[in-house]
Image (tube, rainbow, N blue to C red):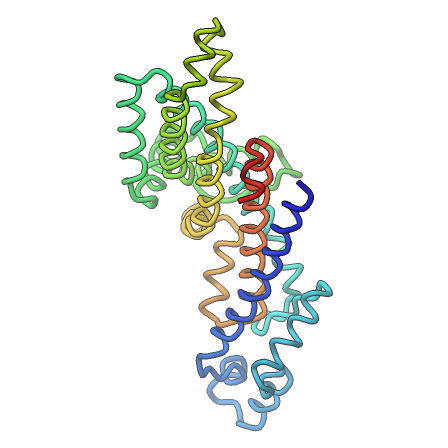
Length: 313
């Protein structure tokens, strides 16, 4: 297991390095005069050149990347070109908001997908068709439409939850729960639809195996067969899709945070990308990649624990 984890960590480190290099090169391709943007169109060219030199933009791109990477490894992500705020501090202030959404959606998706998938795979018949219909409808509905309906019904008409804003958990746990409930619900619809279908298909395949019939012949209860044997052997596809959903959730978080007025990473990405603020964009890109690598590593570890053959794959 240790070798298995070490291989995954090594692959993740290489991925981080490659994506950081490609991202920096792509961000540097547009011929944008950052100094002119900062000082305004009426600034003298000498002042613009001095500002670009101060930011290090007069050097070759690879040298700029090497300098950024050296500081980033040491924990220094630089300073925003446009707001002059520390990038590490700016990201750290917004990260809890997005993490609240991601963790909430992951938990809701895992629980509901497991319940729906196992229910459909074991019961079959009308139950199976009902769960498949829910999956198709949930996956087909546009995310922004689901979000708007939730806001109109539960925030505007029923007034159960706030329509916009965010309350930190440290200030009020109940307020925090109220502000993240609707965003988590809107992001969970499509995720549950996709993962539950994978769990359902895997459960059906396992239930058809010969060893399941053997267990039934030995007199084991259906409940014990499902909980002890079927779940363990059918969990890998669902976990894999759940890990891939994380990438999609980051994209969906941009829209959801804009609609609900949440000061998270998603809204921050939109703001600083339109400005072309490379230090902030690079920090957000690396944060996203690290999150994806960690989630996939966790999924691989769990699958490797459930199925030892996966460690050799």
